[in-house]
Length: 577
Image (cartoon, rainbow, N blue to C red; front, top):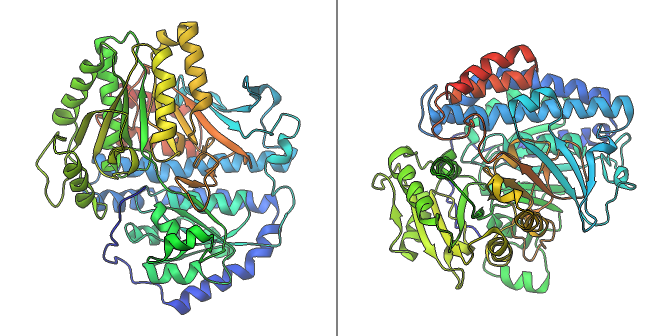
């Protein structure tokens, strides 16, 4: 579960209730027409939005970079480009491509050669790469979406793009409660609801990043002008009004489990009693992405000194990105206790975090209080960086935890620069992986995403490869990324993003439902992204990438207008990283 998130002071005046109601009435009036709109109209709107987002790249990045403590061209600015416009333009490009295929063929465009079946019968779709450009931009990476049991090659069509080619409902209104950390979340959530589920949307900006609202209103102006999208501002009062409004048919939230419980079960006191009785305070259907203690499973193997140093930077980058205010940030390192290189890896990680990783502004409300909570629970926690102040929470390592016991690090997402390490008995992949999977499935809060780092030579051993494949089968996470940051499962957009299915309103965990999901599968179970153990080039989300801003701005241009002619300059900057 999550710790409290204080509401920051408003940066934009709250939308008056009567204005919010007028906006809601406007999209309600457009809902039926939007559900029945032609695919061609949708394609035209997606292209127009992509143009508008590209036009807003600079002001978008400037606003986010400034809020997070960076100037133009800084690490914060470059991250803002990648987390915001790049992710959004990529999602729009993929949406455009899928809609064109639906218009022309009635299919999302995955041939039968892209499907396989796991030994237990689960259907798997290979969703990435899809072009030569993808292969060049992400050399060595691939991704799959695994379907829920019962979905087969024969019935998959009935579980894909279910709202197409004709409307299956008379028009619905979705309230999207935007997240305050990663700036592409509100637009991508709204785009999924608008185009995959054909609902009209009213987006309430999160007070943490509501300063982006005017940028979003310009970037998504074609949809606002069409009458299918509106933005509102404010805190709990306007959110409560909309959550309970008769014209809202469904709610989508990216946030915390505490916010979900307040919406569905009502405020405290009395929330637990209502839960126990099954008496919801709000019967409106809610889909939600609610965070996670993201584990990183470090599989023992024949690692060289350079392997250890690379993956120490890899893990550190999972923590440093966005000052660790990510639901996909690395939060729990699961190591093999008996691996003879465990100490060397932990020493390398300490060195990287203390000597190389720059301190970051703790911009997200409540960060210092959450950090102090963990320091009080673990007095031996190592502060790997500058002393804390009102602007900075130091990178903090809590190491050597035993898997037994009810540790705070296993049950509460810190949502700040705290990484814990737990040592699971095991010396080889075959004894470590089953125990590690059971541990994270049964004792670690959340099912959103995780990473598994495994050496290529380990996977060449048949017994170890079998243990690895069984781990993928058994891990109850909505997104699994092999060898890299779990955030890649969010960024690709071909993959799904959301909790592993199975949470209930009474025990919501990491949430319910999914977004991104470019191929519009209605019953996905999990996505798996595979990456090379040692990639050829430094990856642009690494904290020490020296050409991050050049690479990410050119990736935005590539997704905006794909062209092989743009590859040489992009490759040049990547080589100089």
